[in-house]
Image (cartoon, rainbow, N blue to C red):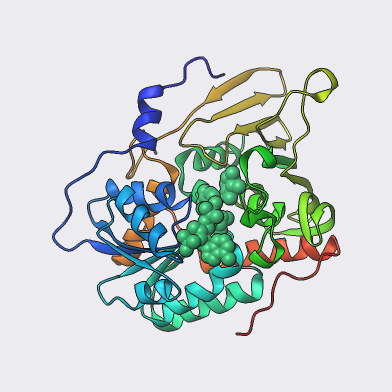
Length: 378
Ligand SMILES: NC(=O)C1=CN([C@@H]2O[C@H](COP(=O)(O)OP(=O)(O)OC[C@H]3O[C@@H](n4cnc5c(N)ncnc54)[C@H](OP(=O)(O)O)[C@@H]3O)[C@@H](O)[C@H]2O)C=CC1
Ligand SMILES: O=C1OC[C@@H](O)[C@H](O)[C@H]1O
């Protein structure tokens, strides 16, 4: 499946061209000099005419300065009050939050209180209750708040849904997904993902991908029947297996995993990544490979009951805005800016979508007998 990897497109996706800016672009402030911010917002902004990155804030002055230098961000804030100082800058219109999950609530609330629109990375909060409060404040302040979960904005996922909704495969009868990583190769021992107090855990980190895709494809919310965890440390799941039913009768299983088994003889060969998503329908099966980062590379395989199989790849929507090389984050930014500017985005994630997503994660942790994710003083 990898034999025709389009390297030119991938290079442009990961290193998009700079475009000329509009006369008054939306000015973004980046809270946290995180690893994800370049992909999630800095590079997408580079190729969006109506946006620019004005400032970054980090807890250390040195880190803020070197990050700003590296990414050519004109202003930086460092030190204990850096995040608040950035938020208080009256020139900033939008705050992007790429902090550990447990800090999403606090800094989103502070940014909204200061009158900023917020793009906050996934999962949007530690739990459903926080998510409700965040969207309530955004609504009260008439500000845009979006949970940045980029696969929802990519046309490949829309194509998967269209294939199912078109009807010839019949109804969905079963769904299965596995998102696994070799965590110890990819993350340091003190990574935010392994820390309960920072909102860590495999389900918090990886769960939103398969769970949200199942919700979207089936246009329904699940009941969580059971969840079994393997712990890395107390209340931090290294692996979680969640069993659900969607639309009252569709069985579904999600496995998320930071400790993929090896493969080959004696399972000694490392497995870097596992990304399985399968929807079984009455008359065939749809499989979607690389649903987490579809803009880099993906394929959709449709196999009908008579054994016939075809493969589709979709990087640009048949109608509407987009380019083959746009990353899913770039599609997401387009929608976010449209919303802030008062235009109808071609795709949107509503408050209910994010709230329901957190509700399922809460329910799964409860079924697995985990302590509730932090209940902060609100
Ligand atoms: N949408 C997507 O595709 C992806 C989303 N994510 C999400 O992005 C967020 C950040 O992930 P990632 O970039 O990998 O994480 P990093 O560890 O690289 O960044 C987290 C940032 O949080 C700040 N921070 C503040 N307080 C703490 C603390 N107590 N401990 C550690 N860091 C702290 C640090 O900023 P400072 O610079 O101030 O020190 C750090 O840069 C998570 O919510 C994750 O789920 C991650 C990967 C992909
Ligand atoms: O959101 C994410 O997607 C990709 C994963 O590698 C990462 O752990 C996670 O935060």
